[in-house]
Amino acid sequence: MKFPALFFLLTLPALCQAPSFQNEVSIKEEGNVRRIRANGIPDHAPGRFPNAHNPNTIEPQSYNYTVPLKPEKQAQPAAFRMQPFGIAVNGVVFDPFAAEWWRGDPNSGWQYEPQSGAIDLGLDDHNAHVQPNGAYHYHGIPHGLLKRLAGDGKKMTLIGWAADGFPIYGPQAHTDAMDAQSPLKAMKSGYRVKTGARPADGGPGGNYDGSFVQDYEWVEGQGDLDASNGRTGVTPEFPKGTYYYVLTDHYPYIPRQFAGKADSSFERRGPPRGPGGMGFGPPGFGPPPRGRRGGPGFGPPPPPR
Image: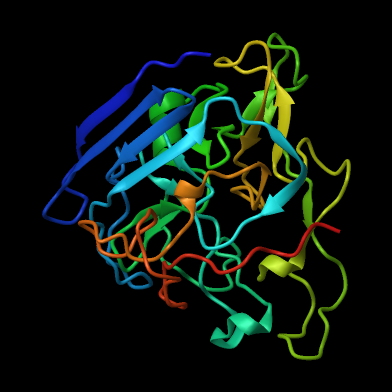
């Protein structure tokens, strides 16, 4: 399906810290890929940054991503590490993990879930906050963007592209995945908090309560979506059907694994020497430090059991 090139140039309201920046994003089809260039500035008023739990200031970035126009599902899904899951149509990245670990130790194997409330990362009303390099990024449903695109009514809404090329939609989708005339409903993920107690040796102990990524498991038939938080069905942009991801109100919020092969342009390589300093795209020099109240995550969650 052919999509028109998109370009937004919007001035943020005064709510954003001075000096204000303009949202810039270009999405074009070039050969066999969709190229996305953006400065990462949202097209809605963000929360106030810095704030008490996030000391960072929003700065423009230099994103240059490509995704395949004809993505294909792989035989097995792949968990990802230290990189964005994808990018929204407004040029802000989806980055579900946080570089926050039990006792500050990534070797512990216990990574805090940003949406759990166990730690306060200063997320705004759009489930976003800011990395030390100034990169504003989403950890969940981007409410401001979704409202701009869908209004207050129910609508199946394309809100971004995953690194493997498959589309990302808001929470509303058809009850019957292959019937565009069927009612819309909020999709439910198949993940749940595990029951019982965490292993006592070398970990935080206590009962599973959702504080950590490792507290969750995916259960076949539990929800509407697969373990990658996606499904195959018809959409307004793909009336003949496609595989697509869904952002949900509950874990995993943003998918934590790819159904297809992620493009290498999304691999986080360290500081790209852009206007914002450390960021998401190439080139770069290695992983960023941990525990930065807004920094990227390290390592994938364990595979669903």
